Length: 243
Image (cartoon, rainbow, N blue to C red):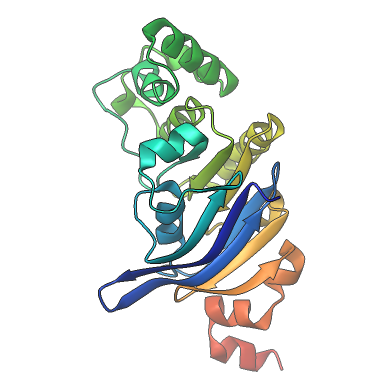
């Protein structure tokens, strides 16, 4: 049984179909990539899985349990956590405080939340910044803090929404082993990313969406060679020049 089964999920906003009967399976322990042009429906799909938006139709099974339409905090307690494209920590609060916000998803005890948050910060080599207010962090550090807050919820499944967006190439290179290290602790990962170097390096399997529909799936090498995928990213004119 897959850890995550998305079955024919559709999300409509009035006349707009943002996600159109998308299905995907994620096995426990995998890193799975989701790619597609801007506006393809990737973040909307994440929002449906994480509970920020109820799907208009379809089924989302997590660990065999239907989660479609459940509240985000209930889904988080079951073990699904997501990060956001635009990181917005509590700027006037410390790094430790921000991380503890995530830890309180699994405990109501202050000392336990603090202990769990500190463990996560050590894991991400951010513990030396625990007393720093988050608005003074660099962008790579704020990205790590976003990861820390998510990991403090103790997820089984982590949804990463463009966690490397805005980073320099060297910073992307630094982030890759961090994501692998998270996965090696037993956390299954689904990652939306535009940086193909990152997706190709990390993913065991890739799903491609365009205009809300899944147009391809498979191992990275096969997917990036798929004509429909090339067309979605580079256009018909580019495809025509390759024949």
